[in-house]
Amino acid sequence: MYYECGICDRAFATSRARTQHANSTGHHPQYDCDYCDDEFYDSDEEADHKDSYGHWSPNIKCETCSLLFRSDAEANRHMQQHGHYKNYCKACDRHFRNENNLRQYGKKSKAAKLGGADDLGAAYQHLNSRVHRGQNMQCPFCKTAFTTASGVSHHLETGSCPRAPSLNRETLLRAIRERDPGGLITNKMIGWRDEQVGQYEATSRAWNGMFWECYLCHSEFSSKVGLNQHLNSPRHKDKVYKCPNKRGGCEKVFVSLAALFSHLESETCSFMRFEQVQQQATRILDSGRMISN
Image 1: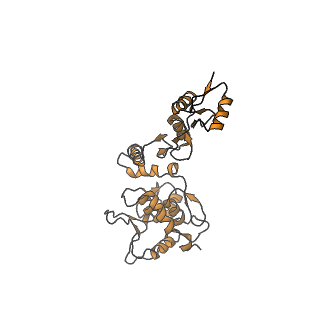
Image 2: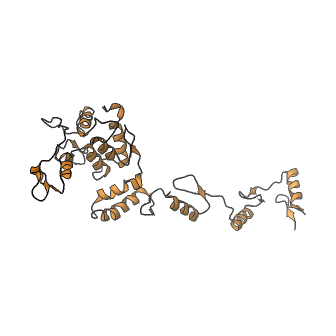
């Protein structure tokens, strides 16, 4: 067996002799393998070697992390195992070419399952649920994690934050009104006054012989506790918030900030994207500007 110099075509009895020749003359091979010590004077030889031994450099990228793979099959195995497809529904174990295809899939399949093919709000709720979004929103006071801005708002409006016990629907509304003088998201109600924060409790008169009945809407409950929860919910309170989408002609009004955020997060009136709602809510609910004690 002889070892040839790819530059001057001289032949040598050993690889070591050829290497010494290359070192003395500068006739070094121009190509080398990334995975072994083999060197080549010709790109075709290099390619043949890499094909034979699978020594090609990894150049297939993962869609979400920095790892590289030698083949599409390896990359797909990695992305499927770790949910690293850029547009991937982990709950459904499907990936899509782009975000729009993922959303269209959500509209068609999830809306049909969650309340009819036209129920796009349910589809967006699925795509914006904890399964897909995680818990990236925090209460500005107690730092409890939530998936959405509407979750944080409900937490505060129901007086559930241990670090801001004085915050509830009414006190939060007063703070929002102060920073919304133009009435973009709050209604200017003639004669509106702060609603009492006191708790309501049903009397024995609410029992109709079979159920505990709300005298305002006539909803029926199997227990007095259930009726009391209903009476102290925002159900019968003024709709003091409104959708800011004037150009789109959306005239929906809401009794709570959480309900307004939930409407915007659903993207059903196309006023802003889900991510923008979270950003705006973070500014609105800034603890540095909110009365918390």
